[in-house]
Image 1 (spheres, helix red, strand yellow):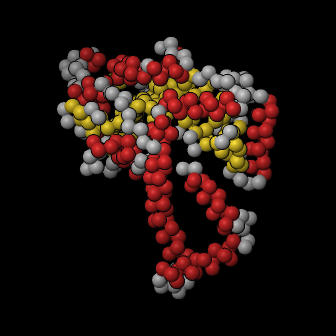
Image 2 (cartoon, one colour):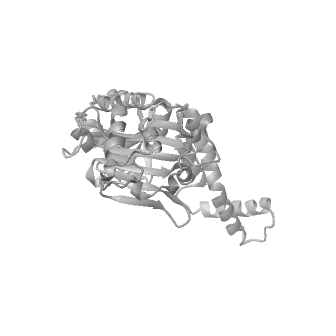
Image 3 (cartoon, rainbow, N blue to C red):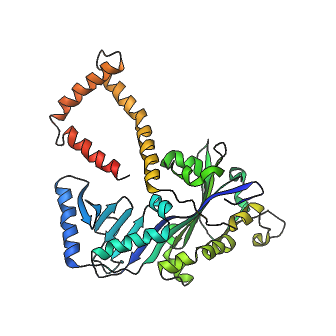
Length: 354
């Protein structure tokens, strides 16, 4: 990865993408999916299975934003609507899929899936998140006044003990939001430990990683004349340059009353030179890390529940506690709508989808 003045670019590229299209969605498909969604609600299930070609989806029991029916795959979400006020199809591609295969291949996958349902799409980008992860810049010690932005809205993230970053802009503008935040701290909350695979051997585990991220919406693309998704992806470098030159910058505070004439910092010049060279990691490897994190994350809660339950007994060891909990669960299970095994199998299916 790129390195300059002690700065290291660990990763950069597309972290999130939402696509829209206005194809003809057949009445039969919409009716069938609506029926399955209603069926899931009546069965008190989160979802019911649905197959397209060789791929397995879940029809969710609820709408997704403005989309009446939604199907979910471990690669992302597809929403459908018959309302003329919105594009008939909307897709959210999950970040792990993007980091595994790249934006072009991910879009191609969803395009081909919909083609199997007789839906021909011409994608536009509703939103795309462009990012750069770096080390070597102590952003925690920067001053708000050093950042010059077109955005009127500004916020600081964190609490009294940990500063985590800046936010510029609002989603309501439909244009751009920028975030500069401590990715190391964010991972502790989000559980995206697999990003460390993306960072590779250049990552220094003893130093915080900071992310510079632009969330770019459809109004921006209309303003700059970028219509199709393929055109947006072909202009990623130019979009980044535009955003880091005229929308947000970090400067050395000077005497000039016009802050836009202050010189750019060496750190921001480095950011402007983002390479968009990405380390793609096999999806299987990413999901292995996610499963390990999931198991680790529930251990503290599990210990708390087991000890709380066992406090109602005379158990003095882990085997005695587990035997008491097993007996209590068995009694509780007999009065439940869903059996322990049914719940177990449902969660096992969910885990397989990670």
